[in-house]
Length: 553
Ligand code: GLC
Ligand code: CA
Image (cartoon, rainbow, N blue to C red; front, side, top):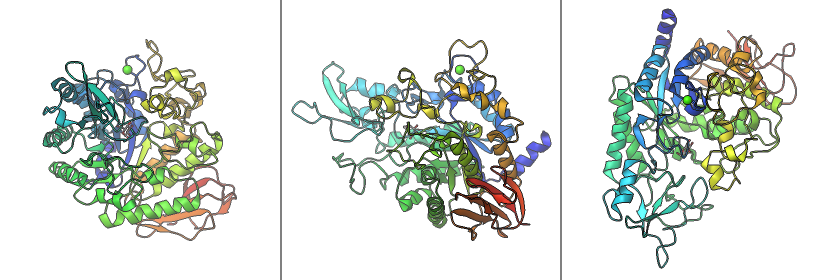
C-alpha cells in the first residue's frame, strides 16, 4: 500500500491537470450512509476503495454546499458550509485528507453566476428595497408597462420561462424584478460590483486553503451582462451577446489565476464553457486564465467517423495556440447518458435537442460506449468520467412525473424531461433496489428510483467479470497509468481504412489506438501486440464498433 502510494505520488506531476483522469461525483446519488435516501459525504468516504480500484487521479464534486436544493445544489446559500444533508465541513476536510492519502486529488464546484434566493445577500436585498447597496449585488430592475407589470426585457431562462421574477416591496406592494438566467431560486449576481468579486476570491481561498486541488467553474461564460439589458432575438443574437461570453469576464479569471498560482502547488481552474465558437472558447484557456475547460463539442459529437475525426482535429487545433491540454468528456450530470445516446438512430446531442424518449438499442449503445472509452482515454490531455459510466448505466427515462425533481422539467411543464434520468443513485451490490446505495435499515427510498435491471450492473456483479464494463474501465485506466505516452503529449493520425480512426501517441508513436466505426470487421492497420480491446477480436480482425490499443514496440 505504502509503495503504491509512493508510485502514485511520483506519477502525479505538478501539472497533473494536463493528463489527469477525473471522476465526477454527484454527491446526492453516489452513496447514502445514513439511510435518508440521499447520497452524502459519509457515503463517499466509505467508497474511496472503488475510486482507488478504478484508478482515477482526481475527483470533482458537484456542489456540496448549504442549499435549498432547488437546482440540486447549484443554488448555493453558503459557499463555505456543507449542506447538512451531505454532512459537515469537518467531514469534507477529512474526505479531502483521506483522498489525498490515496493519491486522489479533489476538485470542488464553484458557482459564481448566481446564488440561492436563500443566500443572506439576497434575503437582505429583498428586505432593504429598491436602490439599496444590497440590491446592487444582484440585477434588480423596475418592470416595464404602466405599472411595472412587465419584465424589464424579453430574456428567457435557460430552464424555460422568463428570466425575471417580480418581487414584493418590504411593505407588500408589487416591486422590482430580478434577473435569473436559470431558476427563479437562482438570482444572478452583479459582477460589476467589486464586493461580488472579492467574495468569490475569498471563497476560492477558503477551499484552496482546505486542500482543494482545483475548482470547476459553473456557467463560466455567463457572469457579465450588458448593463443596457436590451431585448434580443435568441435565434439571431447580437455580438457581443447580452450575457454570454462577454469580453469583460476574462478579467475575473485572470484574477482567479493569480490566486491559484499563489499556492506552492498551484491549483487548477476548470471552466464549464459551452460556446460554439472554438476561438472564443480557447480565449478562456490563455496562459493567465483557466487551465482547462470541458470539451462539449466532443461530448455532443455523433458516433460517426468523420464527425469524430473533425471534432478531434478542431479540439487540438484550438488548444495548441494557447498551450492548454484538451479535455475529453462523454457524459455528465446535465446530459443523457452516452450508453443511451449511442444506441439511438441519431447519436448526436445538443442542449436544445435532448431526444429523451427516442428509441435506443441498449446493446449497441453499450458496445459503442466500450469503444468510446478506449478512444477517450487514448486522446491527448485529461479525461472526465461521470459516476456510473464505469458501470455502463443507461439513462432512466421512465421516472414517474411526480418524482421528477429537475427545474428544467417543471419550468417547461414537462415538455423537456430534464436531467433526472442521468442522476439516478448508483447500484453498489445486491439483487434489488436500493442495491446498497442506502444501508439495509434505511428510513427512506433513494431520492430517485433505480431500475430493477441494474442488478446486473452493480459494482459487485461486475467485479471480477472480465467482460464487464467495470473491468474494462479498470484495465484501461491501469494501462493508461503505465503508459507514459498517454495523457498530454504528441498525437498523429495513421492511415486507416474508410470509417476507421487510427492514431499513434508519443514521440515514437509506439502506442496506437484503432476504432472501427465501419460495419465490417477490419484488419488492424498496424502490426503489434494488442494491449486491450473493447470487445473480443474476430481472429485477427477488429469487429465493428470496437476499439483496440496496440503496442507496436
Ligand atoms: C451548470 C450545471 C447545471 C446547473 C446550471 C446552473 O450548467 O452543470 O447542472 O443546473 O449550471 O447552475
Ligand atoms: Ca444520506
